[in-house]
Length: 362
Image (cartoon, rainbow, N blue to C red; front, side, top):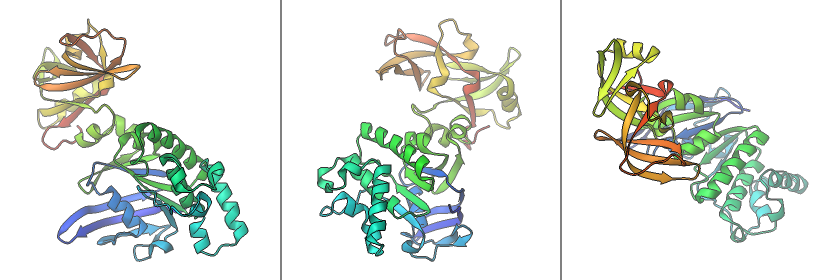
């Protein structure tokens, strides 16, 4: 499979620059997910790889060969769009085989390929149906099968699950993960949903404002975010942020703020001491707070419970800490009453520190 490399990729629409020098390499047989909020440049990047948008500056390389001057049909890729874009008058088999018939492939080859890809995405029993007789998930599978039938080296997905309901999105995520294991192709997937990114990707590329903020495995981005944006974007519920100041007292290093005075230990204490500014933001994920009535006050937060959201095995508590809001994940059987002030111990390894001005991780 080809290696894809973006070198100093810039995109302008008139005077407005939307991509600012994107440098990225996608390895052989890798499932890469571009994720970020609306307007971050992820779909524009994908469309430039596909040849649907012109490159303002920079170059796209596939196996070391520049391709930005090539037409989409000459780039050895297939794309699945947000809209299924199926032909309503054709049945499933005809939709899947459309590109092959257009290329005048032999009928026996076409029939064999259609059966293969239909089996891969679970559509064998629906080949004679027309799109109007299919569910949303089945239509999306037809769009994926049509892309697979081209047997390209690169597959591009532009938010393919965003039109589906929540339950169906979960099912299709699992099917996509299984398909990527079976197909063994380069896949580049664009989404604004960080859950999709975390569950599907070999590597996630987080974008914001036309820049790559961080790239790495889902675990790397979740545990070691390079800045406050990545920390807040990756993970659900999102990370809690508390503004504070680094102070030293009672022989220790603390982060002191409105309603809290938390001691730092080990490497985090040493990092805080060396940092050139005392104004920082403390980051703690909801899963790193544990209800513990007799926890050490220097390693815990006292939180006023305002809202409890029951989501099955877990409950998400919306709490108040000074003037800030804090979310906590607890077992749904934890005895909690609104208006209570409860103590939650902080997992020391789950503490993140960010420079308050630059928002870069310490």
